[in-house]
Image (cartoon, helix red, strand yellow):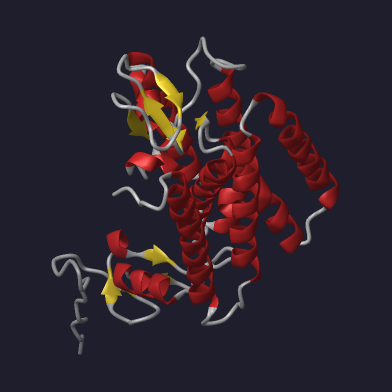
Length: 308
């Protein structure tokens, strides 16, 4: 007596006859639904469930692993776009450069700060409440025909960011890297304000010096061969000394110190449930210290008043 075999179909495609089961849930699956596994095949739903249950790799500081330095590329593109805006409208530099205290005369010229200032003059910079300059100056660069370097200013900075960012961003992860970059830029601007408030400063150098400091800290943390790293740091510090003659050494030093402090907090935070709290707390604490220092300095420049 012949027995009629039972027809089995794919649970996702009921009209398709099949004879293979998912090795995880044991439901029948057709060739279109088969996903190769270590043993046999699995269905798409079990593959997704398995991916969710796999622990995601993290960087040494707890950030998400990123093989493509997207933040570095975005920062470079942003700097270049801002530079093109400068070429189209040169007044962008005057409007957004890092200036602690300055005066604009009746003829539109720029003059050194004095308090009280003469009639017909108006303040510019942080003394006029333009706090955004603490960060916007880090995305501006010298016009092609001005300053010691001209167009070489942005070219050298972007080359340095390209080389350093591709090393440091994968070590930190995108969020940590962006936080370090911005705090380094802020640290550079604040030191300019504290030491040379009347200077008009532009350039990403302060932030890049902070990334350089992070490169050194992270290399030591992972136990890398320090000979090459030490040579790099020697060159960076040499440029810091030389820059005292031709550029804003205050911005460079401020970025270096801020970036180093953030990198230390990221690299040596306890590797347990407190790590995120310590890292965020360190960034917030640094931002508060820099903010308070800026407010106190501006208050001194304005005779006790804090511009809104």
